[in-house]
Image 1 (cartoon, rainbow, N blue to C red):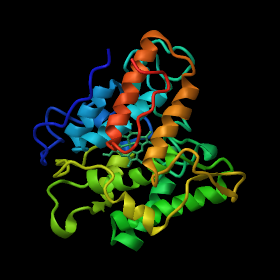
Image 2: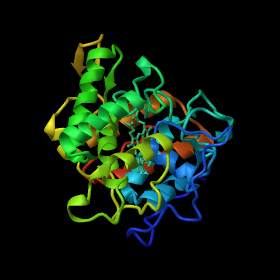
Image 3: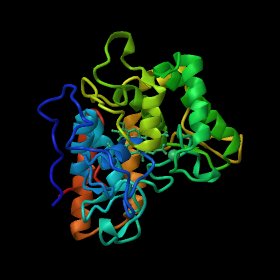
Image 4: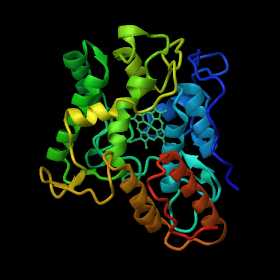
Length: 330
Ligand code: HEM
Ligand code: MG
């Protein structure tokens, strides 16, 4: 039976996380990495299994321990990913591509790993190209160079919420004009804004205070985005955090959820919800997205889907949003 979600750690202040128990090691042959610089870094420092395969509980514990991600954000992202691309029977998730290490995949082929395009991974990433344009997983130097011009133009050489707002909008405009298959619906509308804010809150050394807080320098950014490595002697954030500031990014240059019908032709579509309507996202995620992946689950599969759906609902933390039960209640 999948265990209940881990709670927050007892100590939630800053501390050295690039410590002697967690030395960086380059991935070895067979080790899996994916599109998330946060999870990749945790695997390369041994906060996650270095092979890149982990249970949801291990992921929640690792993002809290290594980055001080707050408990609700950790639970929400992790169980959402697990339902989309994990093996819910084996209770294992790949932080990259599909692998036999997550166990027998049945029915269907849903345990694809986090790299699967169009589930959690999506378009207009900051440092990875769109699937339509090439390798959606690999660090892209050209996109990092573009980002660095935004660090300089809007952030005095640093990445902060102001830079995030400009770069997020620019990447969306680039995808709208060049990617005929561009999609920014539902979860991707939420994660695109969240991922732009995460580096401000969680990639900045937790000892920084005052005007230096929330300012990510270029070398540290490169260390995380390219090498999946804590800057030497890195201290995690001083308080639990996640996507704080995403609301500012959204309101600076609002873009409605939607998708392209041909390059340059962006069609607004909020049928899967958006960052502006998390309850609608939750409801559609359960009733449409997860049901499409698992139309008729039985036995252990159904039990584990129901448990994980409950964990997603609890992470939402909105009692005014009704819980939905596509597979009945146990
Ligand atoms: C991107 C999953 C935690 C930082 C991504 C992507 C996925 C993902 C699937 C790729 C989306 C895309 O851009 O196409 C997860 C899950 C987490 C998690 C399931 C579990 C809690 C974290 C943490 C951090 C982080 C703790 C930071 C400390 C980022 C950033 C990106 C990203 C900055 C954007 C990369 C880019 O646009 O180039 N994450 N993530 N994530 N994640 Fe995570
Ligand atoms: Mg992407």
